[in-house]
Image (tube, rainbow, N blue to C red; front, side, top):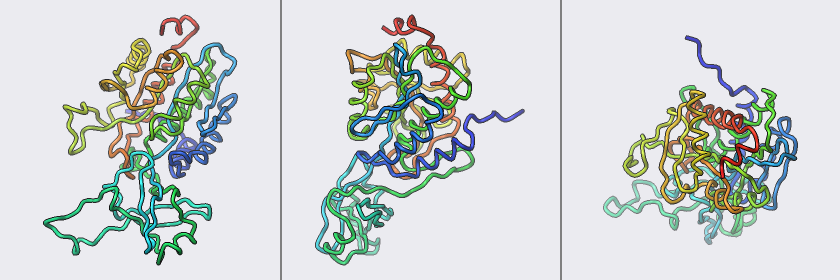
Amino acid sequence: MMAKKSILNKKSMDFLQTYLNNASPTGYEWEGQKIWMNYLEPYVDEFITDTYGTAVAIINPKAKYKVVIEGHADEISWYVNYISDNGLIYVIRNGGSDHQIAPSKIVNIHTKKGIVKGVFGWPAIHTRLRTKEEPPKPDNIFIDIGAKDKSEAEKMGVHVGCVITYPDEFHILNNDKFVCRALDNRMGGFMIAEVARLLHENKKILPFGLYITNSVQEEIGLRGAQMITETIKPNVAIVTDVTHDTTTPMINKKKEGHLEMGKGPVIAYAPAVQQKLRDLITETATNSKIPFQRSALSRATGTDTDAFAYSNGGVASALISLPLRYMHTTVEMVHREDVENVIKMIYETLLRIKDGDTFSYFK
């Protein structure tokens, strides 16, 4: 049996690695957005950006109807919150950073003088009281940059408000598992960019404007999507994000559902998900033999889908999620086949949106 041909080529993979390895913390996404736009430039007609850095690549911008495909560009991080007299740095979150993974991690502190390296320190096991062992908490984790005191730390360029990221870079486990920090949701930006590449290379002409949207500030409350949807005013929005692979230890499937990496993209069921658009996606996947899973999300999806759905008097919106292990850690993991199938699912769905009658169908 012949192996399936991958839709990801060398250029795609080089872009993915460069894009993931670049730091893009919430509120400081611009360098990552430039990498993203440079990759997309040959495949689109024009770009727009907004005040806070959301980037939109547009195909067929003069069309009457507008379809958004969206991911978010930001990654979780920390802020410098306090510098002690002996030069140790205490932090607060910028997004949902996990304090329990912090001890012993290397960090990059972003200053106007450049990157200052540091480590999240932690007391040695020999010195901790086993009967009253204190766990890592946001108010006791700290960064050591090797400064002898506060004055030396400040001379190095560190001050309250400097953003802090992890330097962990992209690698592949066992040939088909992509591992890196910030797969949530830089993979979304990558996948929608690949949709644009395939449309261009296959010479597909769409009867609507396609707005490939890489939103900022999702990790602190869907803020970028809230802003850009008012600028675009789309008719339809297909959002990509990640969701939990619930097969790993200590996850309750009765609460989180059964979702598994390698079994296909996850299609969401939630009030914000417009039923007719979701049905179009599931029918497309079935007809195109694209495997998929389902997830029920109750009151809110917790993704940019909510921001698009409830904007502009209501926008037909749907959510396609990528199963991911170890969310909000530096070793987030996804399956290559799931990545490719999300790309195929969006691509094939777009090709089934034919004309104005289709948009009337969503109302």
